[in-house]
Length: 179
Picture 1 (tube, rainbow, N blue to C red):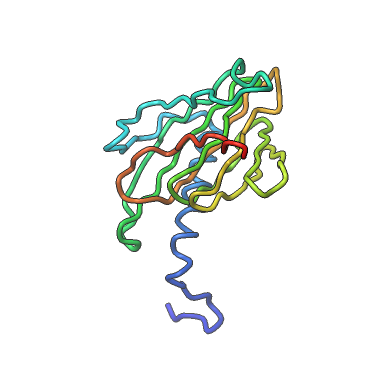
Picture 2: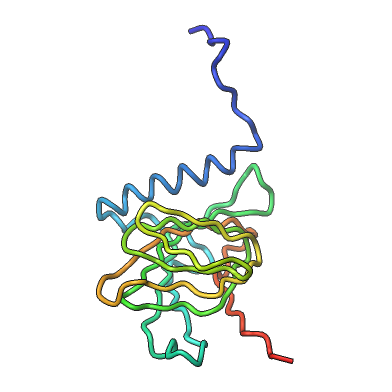
């Protein structure tokens, strides 16, 4: 079959973005169909569930339920030496709150169900519903994430691009001491 002259060409610099979008779309479809037992290839984490520790004080946040991060996969990126892509399901029980933290690499979050409020340092808080996304640059301070509902759960799919070690996905970050 002959190539059409106006056929789009593959751009190597866009390959990582396309890989992320394809992974996100496929996992969102599986999650929507209730198929959350996706094969796990997490050498470091072993598929363990991680709960965000409550360290925030002052507004009753320490009394709220915690989020649960369930790594689904971690794969080395052969075209980006030293980097891996990790996909995780983040579950927010009703009224759940995640305090100030950061991530070791870039993160794209895709809300699967419910409503999640989130704020990065230097930006206004945003409210995201099913089908909406946000991006967190490497090392950005994530001031909080919370389930906006006190009665319904929320879930998001998080795609991380970080170093090859498939290590911790979330790093607690304490509030700076006032001077």
